[in-house]
Image: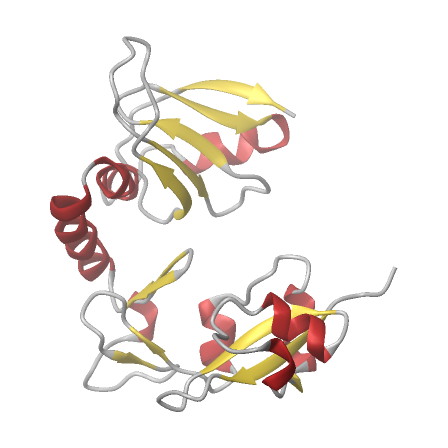
Length: 208
C-alpha cells in the first residue's frame, strides 16, 4: 500500500493555500476540497513537514501556525498567526474542527449567531462547547431525537487525552465513550478548581 503524503496547493485566490494528502500530486489535488478547478490544473508541492498527519487527514491549526501559516478567525475574520500581537494572543486560539477562532468567546458568539439562523444543529454545538470547554466538535446534527422522540440535536466531539470521538444528545445525562477512553473521560470531566468544567458526573456507556 502506497503511503499518503502531504502537499500544498495554491488556490488562486487571495494568496490562499491548502494542504491536501494523497499518494501522488494528482491524488492530493483530487482530495483537496478547497480546490475548485480541474485537479489536473493544480500544482501540488510536497510538504513533508506535514506528512505525520496523513492518517488524520488534516493538519492541526497550531502545527500550521508554527510552520509559518496564518488563519482567518471564523468569527470576526481577524488574522491569526503564531506570535502574539495587538490582534490577539495565540494561547487563546481555538481549533474547532474545520473552523478556527481567535478566542473561545468569539467561537461561542459565532455559534450563537449561526444558531439563530440555522437552529438546532449549531445550537447543540454551542451547548456542548459550553458544557465541556476544551473539546473539538467534529460533527453535529439537528435531527437527533431524545428518549421522548423530541428533536434536540446531537453532537460528536474529541477531547484532550481521548483516542476516539464521544457522542452526546443534547439534554441527556449520558455520553457514549469508547471503552479505552473511559478513564481519560472521567479525568477530563472531573470538577476543576477554576470552575471551567461543569463538574456534573455523567453515566458512561462504554463501547469498543
